[in-house]
Image (cartoon, rainbow, N blue to C red):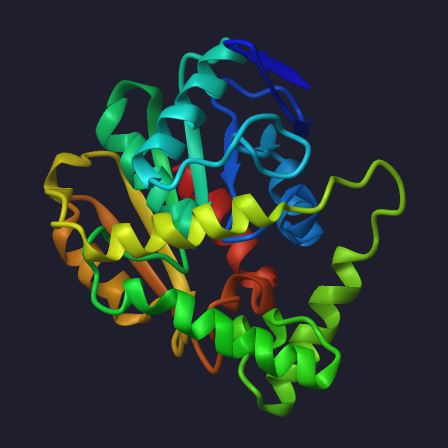
Length: 267
């Protein structure tokens, strides 16, 4: 736990000491235990990794703000409370929006960005995430399964196998598991994502740091083409779309994604 202006933030830190750590920013309704261990451990094999629960998420205190920019301000405050001068960011889905806002608010703090399964402020269809999520949760309730089966992975034989492997990996930690996310946090995050989708676009040309964009080629939550659009609008960006995969493409293709991230951060 780390005190940030009177609020306790929960985090995990692992990997070798490195001049520039990699800070992970997680997705909608996620806590520390929702990061794929193959991503965390794979990147931590070479880089220091810091994953944390933002305000009001999991074991962190406070209430989740209903605005991406406020989430970004909290993340910046957490990093500064860690006494870090510069970091790399890996933001998945909602975390990718937080990372974009952080880069615009505190550009000197951010060295490089990895944005996955995400889209720009004002991106088409992002405001419909609530509807997509509700339908997935209804399917999950009817099938006694996790909604991420439908949100993250295609309903193909390969996609179903990838989902099964992903959930098995999430269950590997047996001790010191995080608290579950609260109803207040879920509702605030959905409101924040809708506001992000309906807001006027940012000038992404102001993000001068190198950016690696990655997604599945058939993302039901955040249109995969938004990654391509962002790559065109960012001055120094690279984009990869993994075949036959969806929102969780980086988990389905973790064996390719992790080395790509390590190479990008080392270049």
